[in-house]
Length: 233
Picture 1 (cartoon, rainbow, N blue to C red):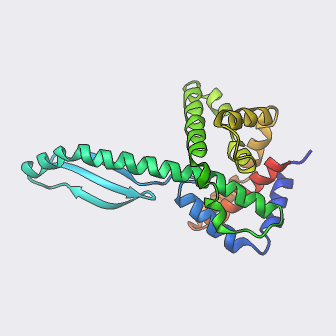
Picture 2 (spheres, rainbow, N blue to C red):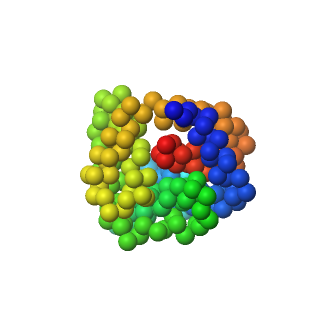
Picture 3 (cartoon, helix red, strand yellow):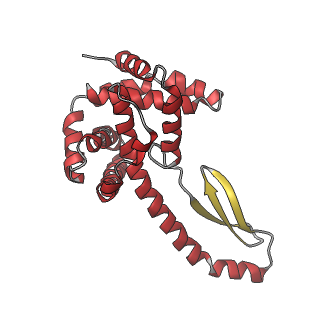
């Protein structure tokens, strides 16, 4: 049986001489929502001077509207909240769909990397023909985990049970969402603790990455390639 150190060793071997393209793919996958959801979001607040609307991208405010305004302007802004919210919902839906596609393409990229194939950033977008399947799968996966999270511990277990879903779709894109989720749950039975141990083994690197600020762009391909090795085993 392989352990966390074995998966990390497999990842380092696969990344040798390919760190550049792996970092680029990991960065794109993160920005596009394939790894971590960092899509555009609209936030609203009232500070006594008027209603404020903020457009945030990648955790940063890129545009702010309102604040220190007259009551009349505040009323006009409040009247436009519905339209801003509608735009925000459309953007969120589009980003969710794009993220679900990249969320399957990125595991494919890492599996190819692990298999010694020539990696290509275009692989991130290879599953656009299956966008309905990837989006519905991510939606169901998110709902299942959220519902189980009401009981906390079962929510954590559910997250690990469905952790291999994207890898399964990367290998078998013709699976239905329910089939992919069911196969991941079956695959992870008895293996949840092993995946937890793999993830916790990166805690030192995570701390170092946060200290160095840009270290995270190198940590992501390392973690994801090790996860691909776990899936393959």
